[in-house]
Image (cartoon, rainbow, N blue to C red; front, side):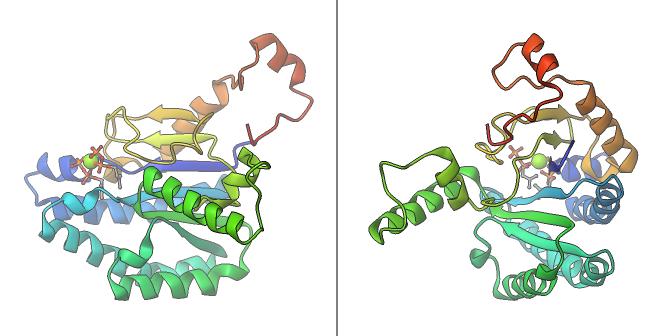
Length: 246
Ligand code: IPE
Ligand code: IPE
Ligand code: MG
């Protein structure tokens, strides 16, 4: 069963350029698409949806674009907080959100707190996120835990270490989608997607509607995930559970 879908929402700028519109319009359309995809994911019974909304490297964009993105994020959060409650969606973030502007940081913290009562559907926004930073932060936290005697170096294993990542207690994504025809990962969930299926769509994010998501999921279910084993083993093991922490 598909539990966790992660999406690299790419192509807003090209969507706008093809229409002779400013990039901001592409981002606006992209934000509008988020609600549709969130609803569709929930309707499909998928419990976790991670959206790559702003990477740690996106600060390198022109200041005006960064500021447009931040103000769109703020408006989105204010507008969608009612929708999150109505649909009992718990909001989480991954990434160094304390480096975002204070207002956005406070809104994010408040909504995360308020929605922490919901358990059935988790929306995870990757904001100022980069896998390498995440690993550094996790190693730092692990080292502190060792100093305090909470963890030991000899017991270091993936199971103990993964809890220190920002995705700590979420299952790994089984499906990672990237829109807009780019075939790269751009520092997104590098460790968590070790055994994920990737799905690359040529469609720009503002046009990647619920039907496109359904096609991606259909494609996912046609694949055979082997986790290092042979196809024959997998077919024999279909009735036995596969270790999802692999
Ligand atoms: C994705 O669209 C949104 C963010 C990265 C914030 P882009 O802005 O990267 O769109 P393209 O890649 O320039 O078309
Ligand atoms: C990745 O897209 C980040 C997000 C979708 C938020 P980019 O457009 O920033 O990635 P690159 O620069 O093309 O690799
Ligand atoms: Mg891009």
